[in-house]
Amino acid sequence: MTDMTLGYDEFCIFLEKHSGILLGDSKEYLVASRLRRLMAEQGLTSLVELISRLQMVTQIKLKTQVIDAMTTNETLWFRDSHPFRILEQKLLPEFDARLASARLRVWSAACSTGQEPYSIAMILREFRQQNRKVSAGADIVATDISPTALAQARSGEYSALAIGRGLDPVKLKKHFTEVSSGRYKINPTIAADIDFRTQNLQDSYALLGRFDVVFCRNVLIYFSANFKRDILTRMHATLNPGGYLLVGASEAVHGLSDLYEMVHCRPGILYKKI
Image (cartoon, rainbow, N blue to C red; front, side, top):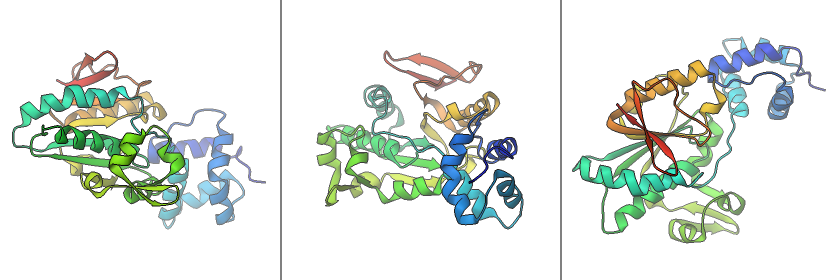
């Protein structure tokens, strides 16, 4: 029986320090469910033993595996729908007129298994096909801290169960190919617009470049107030003048009115760089 009580507080400190994830009190059951297999493979019976092992400088791989296991990879196609309507109906026409010959750049932060950046790419592709175009095309940078999630995203292949979570039959037929019974792969024309990269949101964003639109949705809820502010401040620095930030439906940008202007789209809110 694995003991998840002793050492729990120390584990919470480790997790927040290395990933930003804030567990809070009484989440031992969550830790147990997500780490049980990994700890069994490592021959560990308590969080005290795990923390001791993680403190060894040789355990870089184990640290990555622990953070990977504790990362929530809950996602849907076109999640919440209105951010994608805003992208299609407001942002793309605006940038189409504004950017001229430059390429639109979009960042999908904490992209999980790829549904969000692929959803964005479908919107961009369909927009261009409707006798319009977005400047000289678009580049989507999709990042996540989880190697497992990124491997799934890069493969672009999904089960029928995953496909059924938000993807309508029209888009399935248009943008996917059935590669085996009940498994579908995103078409290369969609995948070509996306660059998947490993990124811990605690680390520097300098190598990512500058963006016109940043999607940072349904990840801020896992962080402390100070870390949220830090992320949103540094994301502001990645935005080009007049760029936009979109956050999750249950998230908001507080105390940063000197950096972002709130724009009501009814439904939906987005934040414009000041």
